Image (cartoon, rainbow, N blue to C red; front, side, top):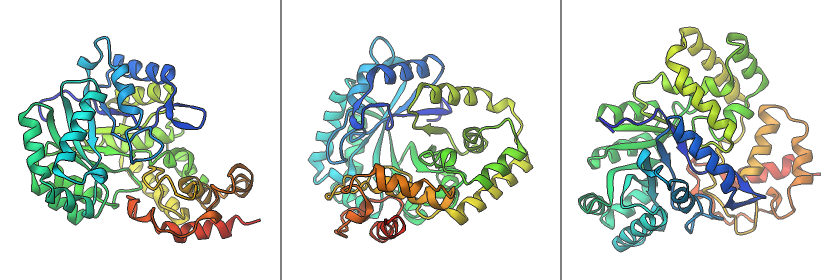
Length: 376
């Protein structure tokens, strides 16, 4: 991204507002307002993916086609568009071309600015190499179907470095926030990629909302005492923007108010002070939070759908509510708001979900714990 004027705040198109509880039905009126307000106020990096806003990650979702609609009337020319090859669905070299051509059509664009290999781990990387993914990227760039190649990543830092060294990437995308500084690629991977000349996009800056809604009261108090005027969102984003190795902070916004708040923070951060005391405050909050959190789930949805209908991430969110914020209503919500099918107690231990989890959670074991924790 060297030489490109990319906004420090990116728009993640995975969590648009939806109609009812149907994730595949985007509330287009509200989402359109969000996108246009973002572009009109300086956001020019939009990140989507083939399965976003689908019922599951085995098929194309509503995000790409909706984004194409939202970028009509001159908006496409104002933004950099990023999407991703669905690595887990690729079974041949021909699949790569097929998915790319389908995505170009779904996005109604002649070229994709930033194209990522989606959610690489050791298994998917090995498979893609065998199918000739590097030649695919070269040919796609030569054909001007994509402009810049990158990858998103969910595995250990050693493999991350191998992938960085394997190709002339322009950029990479990693899960990175103040709670996950040593998780997956982490700071070590961030520094390595930046040192090799890659731009780095930081995803999950709020950790699926956990760093706002899931903060333990003690951690929130530490932050409030240090800076009463600063919100939890500002703490998280400021921490990232203060790191020169981070090029874009990718925020999955789901409401117009989120867009407005994040834009304001992006515009103001360079004028605000960030001190050693601020760093120490966040370290204290991290220590408190890590002591209490039970399940390291970011609600990414990769484990879904469960063939038995278990709502895995919702069960884990309720479990973490119980441990992190000592929420007395967590058990009540489990018992009354989750259907019998969606409850952890309905898990049959098939194991289908665990290889799909970017966080490496022992899902079956943790669901068993949730069922015991919240049993009547």
